[in-house]
Image (cartoon, rainbow, N blue to C red; front, side, top):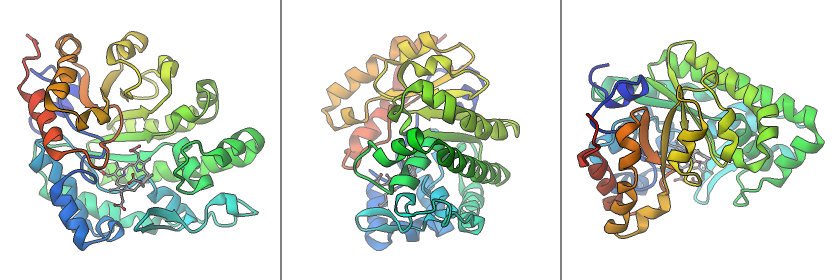
Length: 344
Ligand code: CP3
């Protein structure tokens, strides 16, 4: 790939500024996406490779971000494991969450054909994307997927049934984690085969459990997924939201980059992880509802860090939130691109 500031940064090649993209940049804030949503349901969009490819590239064209992220969802893995996912008006619903099932493995029936449309979407994106824009593939990490499988989609992000399973039904939890991991590896490797440039693994609910338990029970599974992808020459970004000082124990054996949440300052993160790991993050997405002078002051705070830190990708500390004003998101992209980062 030619002239990608994003891929160069991942490889440690210095540019005048950090690259910029946003988690959830396609599906929440773009007026052009909202317009498409008036016409099509989420499921319809996601399973139509032409539409999904078009939406993947909207933020590149309209916001000017430096990378595209595949338009699909982490919940396709529970779906392909037999949970039967549907996207209703109220959001995603599983027909068969494990907690309602006496034998937790009765409905676990892997059907990889349910992921095929995603590979077709990747083919379409590769055909149509600008040559300097890399495509980020992704999957959910095992704990987050386990949470949704066991609890269903809950507005209660404490996932009590999933945590109960970890403490009181460890063997069942381990078997589920193995099944999730095995399918995630197959899914990730097919994304690589179809041409993604970078892979991000979203552990949105890492903060649900003590980090010691996370390292004991989940990290070996994360490492299996990241190693499979890295063995193919594709770099990995890991987003363990809420893991706190647990990042101290994440090393280059696990991932190339860590995406830092908004709870910790990015310079603290740099102090506690090794220098061989890159960082991504970590502006609080809620600040994007504020006035632009508040937003620019928050961006300004990254200048010191970014002047000396070249293995850093600008992003948020979590995904863009619904109802974030589009103009403010665009303002941040322009700010990051035009600031003097004092790099020589
Ligand atoms: O820019 C993008 O939106 C890219 C595609 C993308 C989606 N989901 C589309 C989506 C990505 C990268 C995701 C990741 C995802 N999905 C995560 C990890 C990132 C994070 O924000 O923590 C998680 C935890 C999910 C699970 C999920 N998907 C939930 C809980 C929901 C319902 C609430 C919500 O976030 O909207 C979804 C649905 C979903 N995924 C939508 C979209 C565009 C909304 C669907 C709709 O319009 O009905």
